[in-house]
Length: 368
Image 1 (tube, rainbow, N blue to C red):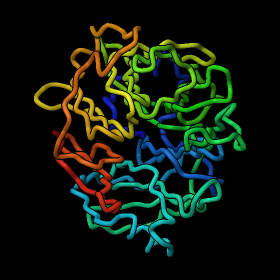
Image 2: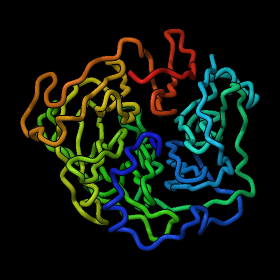
Image 3: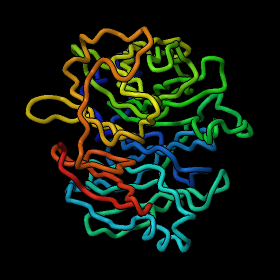
């Protein structure tokens, strides 16, 4: 989902610095040379100096890989038509045997990175690809690279039956974000209160342990602890760092970063219900005209542009909701079929768009 270019970088600075031990200045400190034992390639996020974080849902692990891609930063427009077809050709397979799981822009270089599954199901081969402004697709070698690994504790069982087409193990990591020395990880655990957010210092210096998250779901009319965060960004409200998290059907929730302590039970505040029968896909935060906005891609209502100015004063939703309530939004008519997005620069986003034909195109668009 997730990603340094998605973030208001100052959002989590105070809490992160207060919570984290002293860290080495070198972002690659603590990395060792070897070959990461990735079992899958899911959510992506970039840290400093080309360090790529990869969520391995099947292996229930978070990897940090030094890509060596340190710029100079030249965020130029990227356009690749029929991306799945070109990726399949690059990997020597067929488009229907390729799944593009996430897209993230490296702010150090402006290049796009893709997490890809070659094949289907838990036995698919994980691949990381890189795309530049010239549209060329290169595979990122994971052999003999500098990397680190953090195990995600108590993940859902790999043998647990799928629910509504979703494998619980596949939701052990649903989104990532790096902010000021910490990696935030959303997903499910196998515990009673299974929805959680994990905060890890980078370089990885302590065992991962998350906070259980409880929210009120207005469309469902109840408190929930088992629905995972689908996508999130960091954002500052009244000088305090928060995570703005979106859930299926579609509550938008603010969670204080200061509360995300190991083993804690945290109640998020639902500040918007954006309509049921809808699944959030990806989200970024950006500025335009001196105001902040969230841009939320979802499965059934196009791309929502959500002003954040009411986030501080919005009453928490604690009663059943019919339709929508809380922060308002406008649908960006020009953005249709968006399944992934990330900020390319202050004025542009990189989007992965699925056409009516099913073809996937990667392209640069102006932020609305």
